[in-house]
Amino acid sequence: MILGAGFAGMCMAIKLKEAGFHNFVILERDKDLGGTWLANSYPGAACDVQSHLYSYSFEPKPDWSRMFGPQQEIWEYMAHCARKYGLYPHFQFETAVNGATFNEQSGKWTVNTNKGDYTAAVFVSCSGGLSQPAMPDIKGLQDFKGKLFHSARWDHSYDLKDKTVAVIGTGASAIQIVPTIAPAVKQLFLYQRTPAWILPKPDRAMKGFEKKMFSAMPFMQRLLRGMLYWRNELFAIGFVSKPGIMKLAQKMATRHINAVIKDETLRKKVTPAYKVGCKRILLSNEYYQAITRTNVEVITDGIKEVTADGIVTATGEERKMDAIILATGFHAADGVVPFAIKGTNGLDLNEAWRNGAEAYLGTSVSGFPNLFLIVGPNTGLGHSSMILMIEAQVHYAMEAIRQMKLNKWKAVDVKPEVQKSYNADIQEQLSHTIWQTGGCVSWYQDRNGKNVTLWPGHTFTFMKRTKNFEPDKYILAK
Ligand SMILES: Cc1cc2nc3c(=O)[nH]c(=O)nc-3n(C[C@H](O)[C@H](O)[C@H](O)COP(=O)(O)OP(=O)(O)OC[C@H]3O[C@@H](n4cnc5c(N)ncnc54)[C@H](O)[C@@H]3O)c2cc1C
Image 1 (cartoon, rainbow, N blue to C red):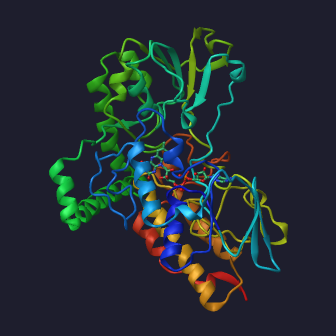
Image 2: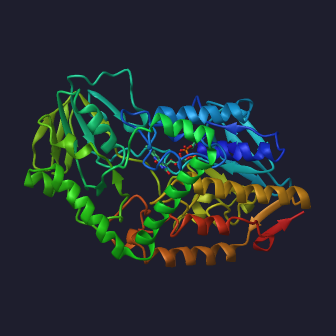
Image 3: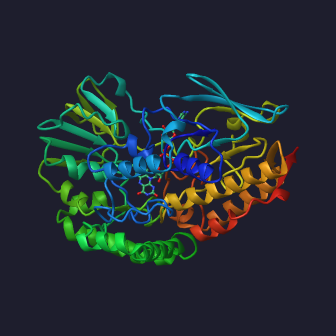
């Protein structure tokens, strides 16, 4: 049984079918496939890793319209994969998982949903690292009488044209939304808590001859994918082992600000006080231009409260608006498995994770046999495509499932000492990275400051570690 119809759940389903397993369902709370790329349909939504790399390795798309494909095109690519690999009969849409319990006698999971219970020998949770929108804790937010929505729940029926609009947040979503809506709205108030470092986006339309060439000569597309892969891996060196390299990126980002923004006060407002790389580096060619428009105001005073028709800042100044857009991101560090999940001896996953989420290879959690998490703890990336990590984790889960079938194991449960030493090692490696030493608080960290989201290294290291399922690391039950 698979939870989630995003890139991870679909990849798992494709690989199950390829291995001859057809008896499974994909439980999805939404009414369609896509996950991230269904939920985030806000104006300007696009990937920030090149599409030729941000796509399955086994399903190249030769005709991406741009270097960084827009949301609708990514969603259509996913729908194409679902059709081609015969996933539609497996989807159970509008089926929200409320909880899951492992039965030690039967060695099976019972998964409770709004449509009843499902039972399965193996439960693969692909609930997404960025699928639970974070609502800000602002006094009076619920009293606002105008239009209010989160960027991941965009209300397309609401026309922003000639409206006065507030955007709260200046992270990855906001920097795509602001340039797209700024020309249409009457006035845009942009509420910023912490600015992001933003580098120019090396985006462009793909040329007709390139699309034809990739179609006729697939190895040329593999060559491009390989070049993009290794270029991105170079960045990992800066994040992980040689933070000094990031000085160059910081110079480029500062030059980017100074080239576009002439006003000294605005320059100061958008220049971060932490080192580049500590928070996610963003890419845009339009954001700084947008915030220099006369109808855009960047407000850094801090929000005191929301009233029925506006926002009051800490200075006591009230601005009135028709709509508030919450570009406030997601519950990342605490949202890996956002429902009650009970393993052996009734062990609750939230209880097991009270000191921070931990897994072995981001995939197996001790005390939770036959459960595989895709995009689990410490599998996120700051430098490249998440699909690389997803494919590696799916490969690992498939190896486990193959061996379970072959050896007639009823249950596989990672040994607690294996998980413990693996995580001690991960945290030790993370302690030297720019994410921990760069002088910022970010969504990579949980409430205790522990980084439970990122993989501290190259993707090829993770791929190597997930290549084989090692039974000696697991408690095996026949
Ligand atoms: C705006 C945005 C842009 C991004 N851009 C990039 C990028 O450029 N490059 C990159 O590498 N990564 C990017 N990411 C990260 C992105 O989330 C991953 O790349 C990838 O899409 C994750 O796939 P997934 O299947 O793990 O999760 P998701 O796509 O989030 O899918 C999870 C699915 O699980 C479902 N679900 C969750 N809980 C339940 C439940 N209880 N019951 C039933 N169903 C449930 C959700 O509805 C969702 O469909 C971006 C993320 C966001 C939000």
